[in-house]
Picture 1 (cartoon, one colour):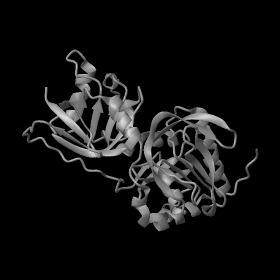
Picture 2 (cartoon, one colour):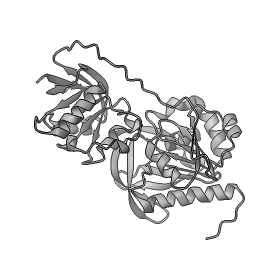
Picture 3 (cartoon, helix red, strand yellow):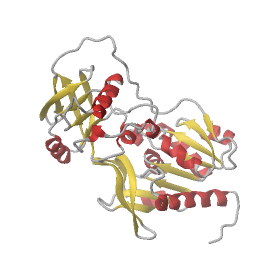
Picture 4 (cartoon, helix red, strand yellow):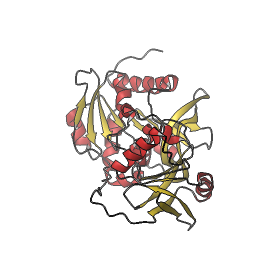
Length: 352
C-alpha cells in the first residue's frame, strides 16, 4: 500500500496511506464532524476545492445514495480519514473507487484527533497532500471550479408565483425546498444585472448559497443592491453574506467554520432554539449592521455569530443556514416570512 503525507501551513506533517492516481493535492483543510449526511456534505458546492478531514472513524461505511447529491458532482479536492482500508468492506471499496474515478486522492489511517487539535489552534488552514511515489497515468483529469451556471433554466413553469434564483453555486435541496411552495423558478447566473431581472419580471428573488469569499462578487454589489431593493428577497449561506456586504456590513473569515447538519441557533423573536444545516467559513459581523438597516433574526448558540438578518426598510431576509426539508418548524418560519413579503409586494392585505 502506498504511503503519503500531508503538510500543514505551520510545517507540521502527518503520514498515512494514499489512495488514488493523483499524487499531489493542495487546498484549505476543513473538518467535518458528522456521523452521517456524508454524500450531501461532499457534494455541497460550498466545499468546492477544499480538503476535508472527516472525524467520524467509519465515515466510508456511509450508504451511497446518489439521490441525495447536492450538485452534479463531488466537490471536495481531497479526503483525510482515520478509517483504514479493509479488504472485506464493500462500502469502503466502493467509495474509494468513486474517488479514484473522480481523480480525488484519499488518505486513510490518519491521526485525525491530532490534526483536529492543530486546526483548532491554527484555524482552517492551507495544506498540501503528496504521495510518496509518482504514478504515471494517462487518466489525469482537470476539475474546473465553476462558481455559477452560465445559462438560464426554468423549473415548474406552471407555478403561479414566479421566483428568480441567483445561482452562486446552487444546491439541489434548495430547488426542492422552493418547489414545495409551488413556485415557478427561473435560475439565472450570479452575474445577471438588475435590468435583466426586470425583463424576467419575477415576484421575488432568492440569492443562493455558494463557495468562497463574498468579496469575490464585489463588482456586482451595485446590481445586487438594485435587485434586493426592488423585489422581496431572501438569501441563504453565501447569498446571506453577499447581501449583507452589498449593503455595507462587514464580513470576516472565521477561525474555523460551521460545518454541521445540527448547528444550534436561536430565533431572536421567540427565543426558541432550532438545529440548522450550515457549511461556511465566513460570517457576518455586527459592524455596519445598524447603518445598513439590518436586525439580527437568528444567532448561533455556540459562538453568538449572526445566523439571520431582516431589513427595516426593504422586504429582505437572509439566513446563514440552509433549508433542506428536515426541520419543518424552522423552515415554516422562513416560508411564512417570504410568503408574507411576496403578498405585501402585490398589495394584498395580511391578517394575523
